[in-house]
Image (cartoon, rainbow, N blue to C red; front, top):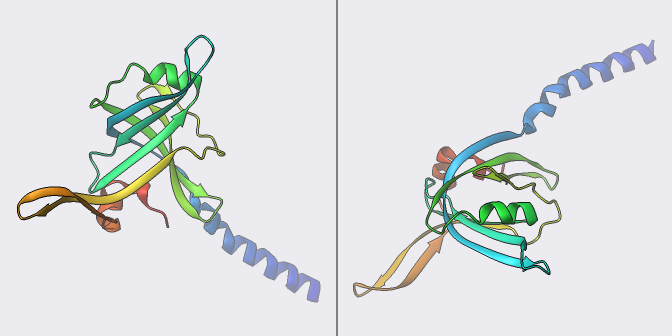
Length: 162
């Protein structure tokens, strides 16, 4: 009798927990970005790029969001056609990271595949709200603060971390 009750209790708990497993569903987004820099990091013996850093700004999002992604040989050859200042479309996946938060990885830049590398330590994101810093009416630099997360994630949900 105790075994049946225990089995029934475990079954109920497992069934109750099933909806929670779907909470961390990955979602794909597309957005336009401004190309801010394209730098070849490494070339092969023939001078062909094998590693490239591609920097862009999320111009359609509130604040100042800049991201640098690193890609391999195929990615390097493909993004060479873009110019700084150009608007391009990116595709990214917003997913649950094993370290306990949501993250987004760019996997395509306007037709150029970029498989995210889990060991990539060169790619990074800067999510801030920056403005000119003026003293006596003269621009002397800029001041950055972390942006209003609610406004940012409402317009650009892939920046949501929790």
